[in-house]
Image (cartoon, rainbow, N blue to C red; front, side):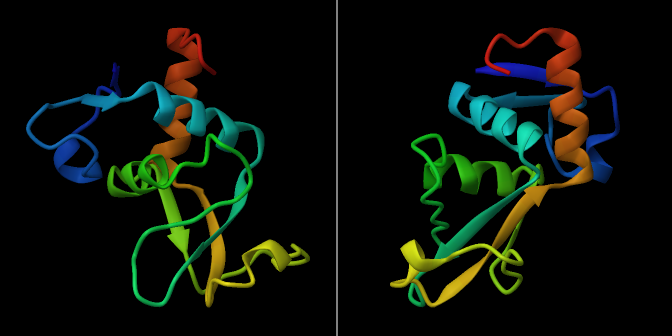
Length: 121
């Protein structure tokens, strides 16, 4: 786990309730944020009977990491907003195909991790 201190008011961002200015990230979440720092938009899908996000674009895109970053408000999942020009052929079995991207809070955390020298970025 790595703590990221944004120095902000967590009551407004929702990222770290009860831990004023501290956001805990796992190594997998940090690696995934690094991918979002390199490529701002990624495909995401889900089945009709579940909320579990699926991204088939690499082993780092594990559902638990995607879900955790979304719950922390660092990425946004838009299951009804597909990427323009992206071939969703590999996602044929998923009826809900969309995109995911960093939020403003996520961009701030990526910048803080870069400034603070996170080794995984």
